[in-house]
Each structure stands twice: as structure tokens, then as C-alpha cells.
Length: 129
Image 1 (cartoon, rainbow, N blue to C red):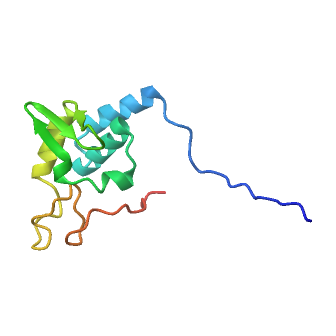
Image 2 (spheres, one colour; image 1 turned 90 degrees about the vertical axis):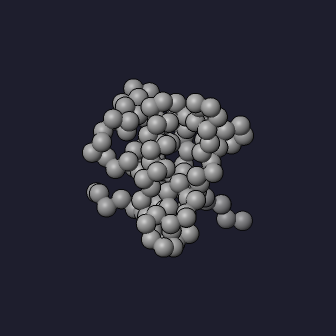
Image 3 (cartoon, rainbow, N blue to C red; image 1 turned 30 degrees about the vertical axis):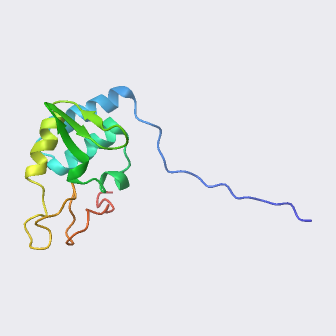
């Protein structure tokens, strides 16, 4: 019987970022208004809650709740608290979400509505090299 050879597959995953890098990216996402608000929100969801983009893009307005002064995000059970100033940024974003001015998307419940009516935003490959 011939020897079984299983090819190995290299990974393109870089090493995890350090805590110092993570905190610097969180500060930048919170304060750099030159970055589109939607991108800042998505970055903070990745950096604070370690959520994959595919999960983030499936969030709805119903996943965001208020309990008194506290903002909660349903990523599991129980919902996770959203710290300030991210909570304020997130609540502001819900009032100004893009892609909600068309007739087909006006009542969209997606936190990140896509261009196609009734569909969430889809991940797209970066155009940067």
C-alpha cells in the first residue's frame, strides 16, 4: 500500500495583535472622525467583543437594547454591556445608518443595512494593496 501523504496548508493569519496595539486601535476608532462612523463601529465590535465580521453584519437593531442608562448588545445570552463612549457612538449611528433612504430599505432592521433592499451589508474585499 502506498504511503499516505497529506499536504500541509500554510496560513495567512498574522500573529495576534498585542494588548498595546489593540488599545491604540480602540482609541483611534473612538476618536478619529476621519474614519466613516460605520467602519469605526465595526472595528470596535471586533476589537472589544472579538466578533467575526460575518456575525457583526447580521446584527439587527433588535440586538441593541437599553436598560435604564445602560446599553446592551445581544451577542449571546445574556446581552453584553456596551461601555461609554462606544455606547453613545453606537446609539448615534442607529439614527444615521446609511442605505436607509431608499423605498426598499427605509424600514430595514439591519444594524448595517446593505444596498440591496432587505439585505445586510456584505463583506467586500479591500481595494487597498
